[in-house]
Image 1: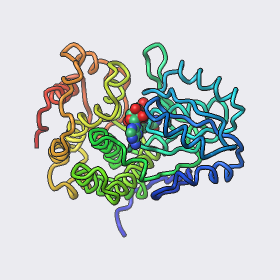
Image 2: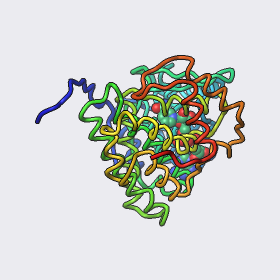
Image 3: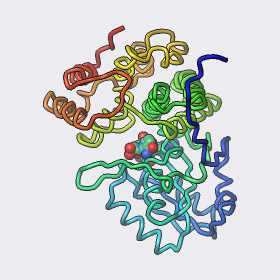
Length: 355
Ligand code: NAD
């Protein structure tokens, strides 16, 4: 082979179990880690599932804490830490999406608890050493080895209850990780293979799930893609797309998966002017210019397309552009305040990106 650029591959560090019905292996995985008692975490929405799981864990369960919330508010973490100590647990089981995984990470990095994560969305947080926490209305994000979950149990059956709209936006959220991994400055051949296969799997699976949310094979394919997307996110540094989503979510409280879904065609369309070769897996699967085909793909799945539907106005777009240019960071295509504002306005209006 010719033309291989220099790279560093840091390895894949989590144990992953993937199939239908794998939630039944939770107890065995806790024991495999040498742990004796798990606090089971969830959001209020998934409390019944968390309680059922805790019941099945019997003596391995230290109870349920079901107050996980979006963006990992520190006051929720403090309450969860009290529950963790009171239950004499030595590990956590996080059953849910990125919000629940975030809470498990916040406990683990403060206590040394091991984490068994059972993801039920496609957000991908379970494969990363990244934790974003909010306190006093500000979101701060950090990376640390103590944040990375030890074991991830993917149970396809648990994703079948994911509502169709969240399936689509969460799937596009996952694809955003893979898309930015393709041009990441610290990309490597393994991550690029994972990202390309993740995009292929999700592009096939999401339309099939939209037609039939109970399609077992499509659900498996989407969760497989989401795993690879999470691993790509964990293995590389993200750029403009994730930065803008972080600004909008952190400063204007826009919903996580929907924000990713709306911005994706615009940010990838913007960057494809400088990274078209690297983004070829998107063009190959969807058949066209990356920004345009991602926009049409999202629209075909009836994903939200307009930032204005979140109640943002011109003043918020201006402020978002200000915040986004404040601390410079790497992006394949240089940008300034004016170009970001133009991009945000397109996403606000829901305009199809230029070819
Ligand atoms: P979420 O975890 O907030 O879940 C959204 C809602 O869907 C919740 O009410 C949840 O209980 C419910 N839900 C989840 N799975 C379900 C299922 N299978 N059936 C029915 N209902 C279900 O949303 P999310 O998009 O998964 O996660 C968003 C959060 O994750 C944000 O805070 C984001 O910052 C974080 N995140 C972090 C990373 C990271 O690497 N640190 C990566 C991605 C996302």
